[in-house]
Length: 314
Ligand SMILES: Nc1ncnc2c1ncn2[C@@H]1O[C@H](COP(=O)(O)OP(=O)(O)OP(=O)(O)O)[C@@H](O)[C@H]1O
Image (tube, rainbow, N blue to C red; front, top):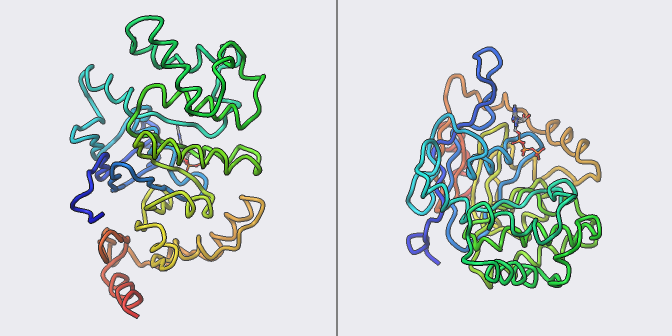
């Protein structure tokens, strides 16, 4: 679909997130981040551990305060001070699925309570009958049985627990789901099942995903567009296949060319070995965020942009 016909569901403009209140221990975790997410797509955010992916997700659902910029959902600014009505709407419409289904589910609560929690918080049901109906439907939607409602999380496998995590989101009838490394804590053999479930739900419910991951092959498989983040800043963003075939920024190139290693810590050191941020000479020529071809953005200074143009036209 041409871009001008796509509906922008979420806009992130010049986002900045800082931790630490005092000047001395202030840490800028996210800076100058810009991206749009279109309705119905899966938008990937990829980068190494500590690059700021989760911080962006948490800022969107208002768990992290923002120090600058705007987050706009369906045309309304949702960061900073907002009114109760809007807060309620985004609590319902934007849901997050977390990485570790072992840690994110309340061990002492039954599945019925876990899946209902968002409904209880927002009193988002007319009566007990309707709540039950919604919760049972959510369980069926994620491929679990309604009888599981009276069980506790420890009675389930990792994959089933992540399905409970997904049910807890879809019961709210969200429009945007932020999936933060939703399969990386799962056994390799069940990862595809959870990804397929997410794709099916996207089709049947018209969902939009922000998919956060460090696993490049998963991102290539599941996303329509992808942004690469390095130390809190997006360095390149494009349609997924385009970016994988034609990475321009040196960080993207080293990330994609690093041979996948089983140990993510070794992978990280491998990437850092190849990528040298001092190659940019930003002191003398500061970078800009440039749309180098339709829907393909890259961070670079004037000289670099010229080189990227040449590389594209080769
Ligand atoms: N509450 C906090 N207080 C201080 N620093 C924080 C806080 N949350 C995150 N950070 C720091 O912000 C940076 C970005 O963290 P973030 O969790 O967003 O990275 P990530 O890319 O999601 O990494 P991972 O894949 O390991 O989750 C890290 O250096 C982290 O230590």
